[in-house]
Image (tube, rainbow, N blue to C red; front, side, top):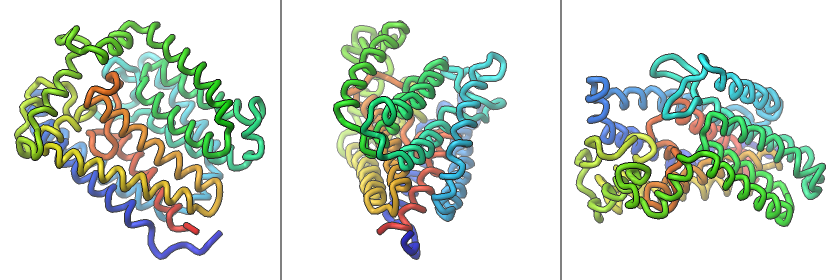
Amino acid sequence: MGKARSAPDIWIIIPTLLLLTIGVIMVYSASSVLAFREFGDSFYYLKRQLIFAVLGIVAMFFTMNVDYLVWKRFAKLALFVCFGMLVIVLIPGIGVIRGGARSWLGIGAFGIQPSEFMKIGMILFLSKMLSENQSKITLLTKGLMPPLGIMGLAFGLIMLQPDLGTGVVLVGASLLIIYTAGARLLHLSYLGMIGVAGFIGLVIAAPYRLKRITAFLDPWQDPLGAGYQSIQSLYAIGPGGLVGLGLGMSRQKYSYLPEPQTDFIFSIIAEELGFIGGTLVLLLFTILVWRGMRAAITAPDTFASLIAVGIIGMIAVQVIINIGVVIGMFPVTGITLPFISAGGSSLTLMLTSVGILLNISRYSR
């Protein structure tokens, strides 16, 4: 292994902390009305966001200083624990139902999402598995099917909650790792066709998903039902114009736009800060992805490279889906915007993952 750099990549740290700062400000701006109505405290969501942001920063600086090879030793155990939590959360009376999905473990307002842990657990395990068996990845049955089978099992357990959005992010990041490890594009294309057929089956099996698809194609068919969120999101973005209505001046947060502090926080950013504010957020994500991919390319070994690809893939897929939903390009899926949306375990684990990426950047060739 090469000599460690004196410091991690500052161009990963800067956009991460700037996005986190924007997130704290916008969570308060987007949630103050909702928080006062529900809890009698305008600062309720802000205080939660600050707690988890601080925990996440501490975790990020901890993992930034832990040699990434440590995770290779614990990858199997981490995956086993993550699978255990995914099973436990499905047990009635233990798993907590929020937003129609049994995807939480916890008490009261504080809880964790096992599916969030599974995303990073899967990244670490697949990176270990494929770095140790890279020569077999071009073989369909012995090389490609085992990692796809493990990924499919995790996706299936997440869908039992059900949580399609998180499942899609997990699959997207996992497939990027598998492809980067050397899987044949032809094999992935065939399996992709099977996956599309399965996805269509999942949509047909659940009427609410089918309604989301039809609402995505024409939200004005059902403006007070399935198309409501998409329409209200566009109503927020439109008036924002170039510079926005001003920080704290959103109209849509007054009980018009559902989940303004989580899934649709980018709508509030566009409404209050305009095109310039939205572009700034996208620019910060672009810098983060660029430097993350640079860390992957210059990583000292295959294991580190695959971890970096997985972490950046997880962030990029989540950003693309979230903003795609907000601007009406994708159906509503319930995906948060990394570092910005109000969140607990999701925010903390995302910052923890960035810490691992920063540690890898210290060993760049």
